Image (cartoon, rainbow, N blue to C red; front, top):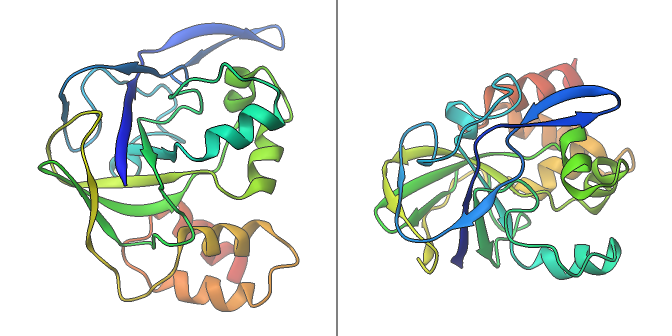
Length: 213
């Protein structure tokens, strides 16, 4: 795996359904080393802190490999890295292989996998397609949120290495599909497994416990 792009944005205001909406989804690639704190990359700022950002969602990464699929599906060949609101565009980032609690090292930074991404309507704004959140969920490769374990700096071109594998072996994609796909086999078993993984974000722990109840 390799970081192909580091993307940040400050809030902007856009019109949506007759209302002014503040959002930071319009990430743009930046060059050079970028400092990473416990809560964010330098130059990045989240607006809706209830649904974005915070300790368990300090960094959002998306696979560069998914761009070809979406360029063809949406007939948008000009999609650029950062278009899905990701902070890090990483080659070969595989939600089916990476598990909740796994840790990745990028330069001197260490990130811990905490949850899959659940898209909101703002993804539709970014891609000019109101159906995008539903399409994104159906495709089931929505990227990964990370907690910052070790701060530092990172940049495009940095190698990404798994430095720790969580013993639970609960992949991000398995958890996502178990929650969203009504035909997923053994969904309850996956939820029970997820509830025991301490590295799981508070947001997803709540989702899992509600589903089990």
